[in-house]
Image (cartoon, rainbow, N blue to C red):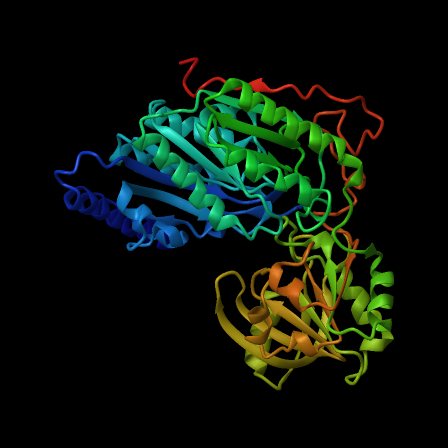
Length: 525
């Protein structure tokens, strides 16, 4: 009932907004009508978790503008079009999306688009690595269904994560397409703005759809932790992109997608795309980027030192540098892990160094345990709590872990976790959450009265450290731990990716990296 009521409220505001926009711009005929839509998630098919609709925290109608700082009322871009936002939803990475959740969100988007057309343009804001139970290439399916509503005269500008996947279908139905150029994704909002600026420019100048879209599949499948743009060869490879894209004479944009490593679909591999109006320049640029990518394939390595958890703990305990960060990589919730694997926490609790209250201080982030959270609330700060945590979703590697300790803090209201508590067990400060949550910023810790800069060791379920944590660490190692986003790709049961594929087939012949020209959207209609 609650969802129905919220849906009706959202529809009311969307309808009201549509009328308001039309009335505000009455008599102005030169402003293009541009819709906004999109769904974003990374989904690991190697995780037993599934993702439901509420995980997307969908924004409806005018609420969509709040997702984009460059679309605030005072923004110059906001004044350059009649904007008709439909639905934008972004979920934490996780398991495959249920078909019911996908169909619900897609159909709501299509219903909204049907109400407010026609459109000169559509900004399609996606991640590109969504998996849906029983459906290949969801983003390609989504955009195809959008095209059936808005037609093929409407220009579509797609923005993506560089860890997304670009199928031929997605490439054909997108007129403009771009992706992040940095990993970690410090340029995420810049990329989204670029997609909107490119769309406006092509509409306002009358240039319309770029005449050429060069698409090159590159048979490489690597995790983000080996392809960070902080280090070589990713750093230099991605530095090639911007100068190409900035050559306005004949090229609109250029992009390299690393692809998403933890899903088993034929579309999961790297892709290079260049779009523009000069056939020779577009194809030559795409082929150069693809060949340069292929030629450095053997140079990709982990962005930080790696080792077993035992080695990582030995290094951290021996280090005079604090805080020493350990990435618990196998269950990273921002790569698609379930977030509740207890394997690492089980090992920590068994270590004698941490069983004394005055042992080395270690912050562990984090483990979901809604029942334990309830007990902690009942006990209150300073009270004793006892109960199990984790392994409710992914118990393949270790069972739920028993925690007996003191409640150090309780915090309400986080968008993802909802309720967070810190339980001290020996010298471990264990963050327990009502729902899974990634810990990427210093305030994620300090709001819980934790001081990560003063801790001896900080263990975070993450791969490469996000910028604030990276700036904070004075020692860092990535633990190669089990989970739905295991960094040992060779150990995962791939059955459907296209082979040969590097690094699975290390001795494969050089592939055909010639540019394939994607037909313009609607060309076959």
